[in-house]
Image 1 (tube, rainbow, N blue to C red):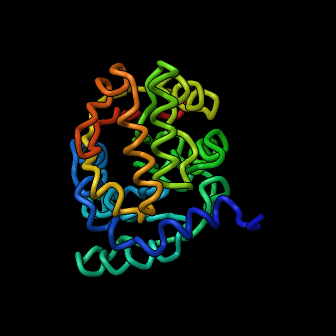
Image 2: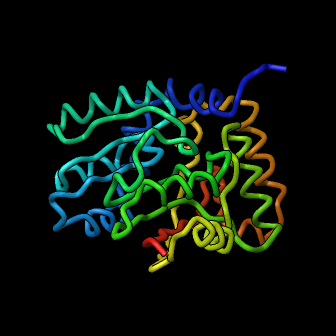
Image 3: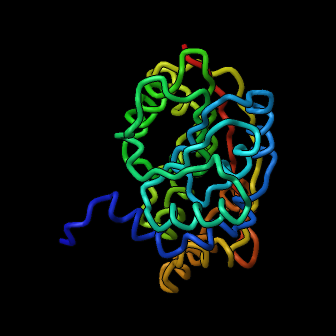
Amino acid sequence: MTGKTHENLIADQFGPRAAAYVESAVHAQGEDLLRLVEIVRGHADARVLDMGCGGGHVSFRTAPHVAAVVAYDLSEEMLQTVGLEASKRDLPTLRTRQGSVERMPFENEEFDFVFSRYSAHHWRDLPGALKEARRVLLPRGAAAFIDVVAPPDPLLDTHLQAVELLRDPSHVRDYAPSEWENALRAAGFRLTKSTAHRLRLEYGSWISRIGTPAVLSEAILSLQRKMSEDVTRHFAIERDGSFTVDVMTMEVSAA
């Protein structure tokens, strides 16, 4: 027994690799990021919460358009790196705050916008975190959650969760769109728009970014080589291990 909590595991996984996530091309670009900028543009007095900010790319993109952005994450090392990068980019309205998404240190109805991108699959309690997001959001506010989603087919779902966990032991679950919709509704949100796209993950950078041990990297490759044609086709698995996942952007308002 290690005595390690899930929160400790996340901090241990991501803290030492903060710079890799700030520099990650996968995280620093995409139509979904541009969509978040569209949402906040024209709201110069708004306050934005970047929930589970990781490398801070949502914060960096939205900060020039609003009055204040809080980059919120469990990893103190990640936040230090985000803060340094914000200074380099001359983003004085961006500040960082450390803590868990399930217990956020903010007042009720504190933010005009709550965004989360590629973070929710690490959350131990998705329903609890979404309720917290709803609590800190103004009644007239809007939120958006972006993450990899699992296919409804159990075969494809199982494969995705397996390779995610082998790569990163802090992975909890890539939820199916139906699971997201049910959780958002239960938390008090109304889904106003959902947009799907496909994201190719280059195997070498995907593995190195999180520091996956060689034995587990080889296990992923071995698993990919043994899978059925249905799995290979859906994830467009390539000879070097690169593959493609489904991503969903879910825009919501207070119900």
